[in-house]
Amino acid sequence: MEILELDPVGRVRGRVTDGPAEWVGTEIDWNLSRRDDYTIVLFKHEGWREPVEFMHHCSTKWATFLMSLKDFVETGRGRSAPDDVRISDWH
Image 1: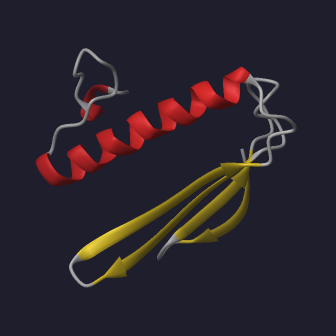
Image 2: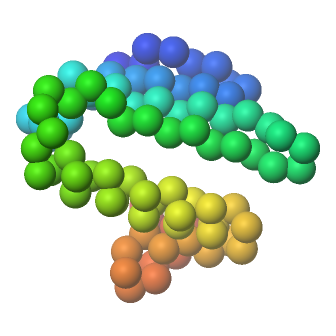
């Protein structure tokens, strides 16, 4: 991934340069902000050439990952897979 923008306080945006053909050239954007006692995570994976089936599959996987990340932050345990593997075991 080529980093296009990096703000250590709240944003990372990058362009995919290698990997699945459908991903190459797409951009992944993480934007974090704070609202009262909450951290708001805005996430985008955009720039797909066409809406292929793999794009829909990836959208579901990103949602699963984001929910796991939320669980990890709130409880110390995330779910990287349906087997309920701990995020700390993702090495």
